Image (cartoon, rainbow, N blue to C red; front, side):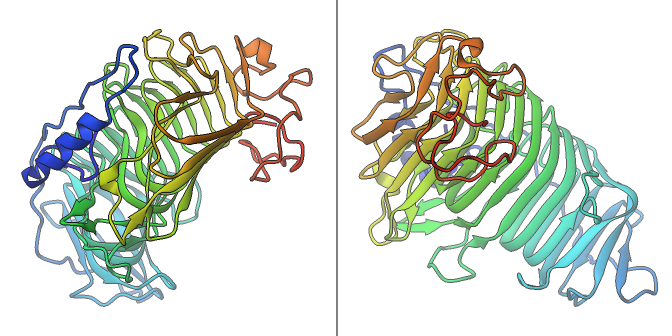
Length: 472
């Protein structure tokens, strides 16, 4: 578990007391064999050295600038030397690179600059190979300029970090990349911006999408927290979507994001993770508010999301958790929601409300760990309430003693209705693998009016009488 201020794998000793306080407060409080493990925070490598010399483009077409590696296989695209605008596209020649740095490009949100591979795959392979991005605003970096699913940027066999974000980053899209055998964080951002609420004091509109990740360490570490009563490192409108992450025995908290304002995490597939990790993990561990929906998490250990609830600003916001399928967990409930007092900063943050609805969750806590499984563990929300409805659960070998669907662990108002629990997938009327409902399922058309129009597969729901669970 990591606290309100991420330690970035043990580097920020000035925040040790804050971290210790949070770690102690977030241990399981049930009398049933509480889980108290703390993840490893050891740095596993040293950062690659940046080539400070910008690379000149090649070719004569003014609308498309081509770049290729220097003799040492390094590339630096620097907007402080060459002025780029959205009328110009940048193409990186296919080949093997030891490092790529892209920095000082500020096109803004309305007319972003496109950077893509050209003529084949751009490969960053080796123990210290990395893509470093610094001081960017209005940039799209994609491995498939045609908008398809090709993964034109390939990162592999790296014992440090694949993508490193630095300084001010906004309106940046990263897409169509693949990662394998990356030992440390795959994408890392040590965001030190002091948040004032004004544009430029936070990372805005960062999108990470269409990534394949096999056999790596933690995928995302986005630092941030509270320093002297002020927020540092805020991520507004962060979107993480269409990530395929699998076969990571010790990924731990695979996506860790602090100070997230209105995040949107959707259509990700996570499979076969944390087989050798017994910490209290969150596949997604997010501090803030936003939406977590249409994700598929299977064959795992840890909550699919640990949603630590806080609203940035003075107006309470919502956390919406819906249309997710979470199955075959070795330990713990599908979701966790909770808040901590040191996340409440006068004049800057307040509580958040939570709605957990139309999820399908089954075969949870197959190890029969003494801490019971439920659709959602609900800790104290410090003023927020939690609504739980239209959820379908089956086969929790160790069930919550107070409810089949939620496990109350704090002083939070819980409003629950129209949830169903069954002993098996067959009793629930679910079709194996697709988790669609057969015509005889008792969940069919049995739910209360819901908040979303479509189900997990994009099928339209009856707004007044939807089915219970993630799939119509």
